[in-house]
Image (cartoon, rainbow, N blue to C red; front, side):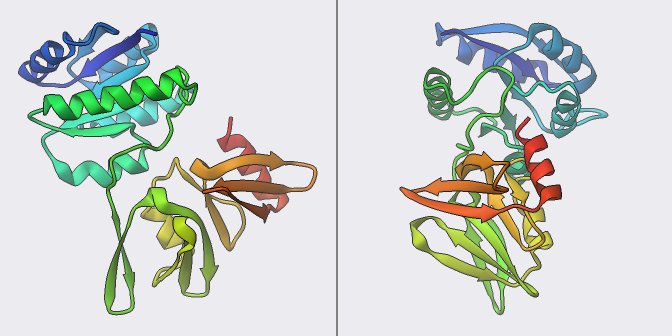
Length: 245
């Protein structure tokens, strides 16, 4: 399938460089470019691209603000942030970006990102206007635990459980890790679009969510062949339902 794309960047040179790199890909069609969020919003809504290459720092509004505006229209293309600043990596995860490339763009890194997007689109994991799988390159989040600092990849977190002033993280590989934060504080460090509270004391990664039983008020997660079933109070069940569209 062909991938329809748009570039959003306030630097004409950056747009030109990326256009030249994308000419090597026969299955990518560039539908246009925009130099600001205000220019990009109507362009994206009109063209409905599968993929948006987007700078973070732009005049007046940044790239994250465009994502918020697009969500108001319930349109969510795959986003690859292209920026000169690596400090935005965690924010990119929190906004469920598909990938994150540093300027000047490395052709090999661009190729890897496009190959992964192709695989997801062809495998049925990503449809136009839906969130992609959480497949960002590993970017670990810092968590405090007593006198130590822990670095944990959000993709490895299956669920979270509140333990008073602490939060217990249940990780892939059967591991557990306690962090010295309330569950609400822990959630603030994680991608907002990828994790959801399902009760006062529990939160889950939507990456591993496989089913929701409204009658039994339970949800099931599956990771590495193991299933995890959680009870979900009524008001949280509604939130979970809404988040799944």
